Image (cartoon, rainbow, N blue to C red; front, side, top):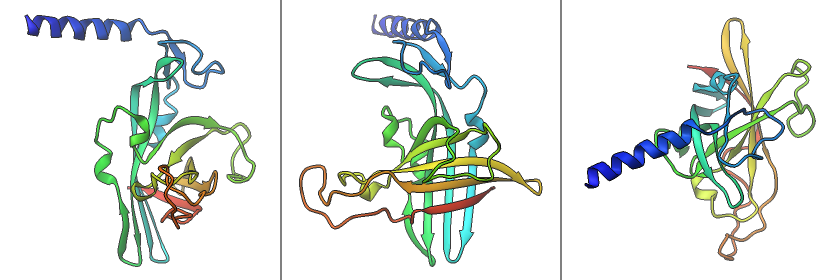
Amino acid sequence: MKDIAFLLFILFASNCKAQSPIIPLNNSEYEDIRGAYYKDTENFLQQFEGTWLYSNNGIILKIILKKKEMFYLNGSILNFYTDYIVGEYQYVKNNLEMQNTLGNINMNHQEISDYNIYGNIMTKGIKFPAACPECQPGELRLKTFYTEPTRRNVEGLDAQMVFRRFTENGVAKLKIWFYSTSGSYGFTRDGQPTDIVSYLLPYSEYVLTKQ
């Protein structure tokens, strides 16, 4: 009986997904419809998938990006599905490994924020702090959120990465604008004082090559 009940549950869940209205991810009414699937119908996110590497002046930054399809978001107001890019990274400075979260990329987390890089926001913005003078008119870039395992508990310490995929001399490259969206308040989320005011990875622009 338990096996039958479990099978019925799977069939019911699959049927619910199949009946979810599919709406393009870049639709202006994003998150407006309960149970909808906001799908990357134009495969915009796929261009960022893969392993990317930056190496310069003793700094090595390796990022792996992966597309997560039909990720379920259980919010306080609306519950819906959507596509995401998730990512993890390795940061090495002067032969010393500062961070390595690459093992987290294949985890099937229930919360999207459990990945250290995640996002699905398409942006045309060309203003500070992610100005893009080389972007073509109307060109879309990908905005993502960034965190580090040792900085997750710091109140007010938030950062974003904006990705631009391009080709140079036949080589696929990824430009990243990494910047702060706030500053640390000097306290952890449980109210304890901290001297952490930034991330280990320096805020900057990075150009990575696809491996």
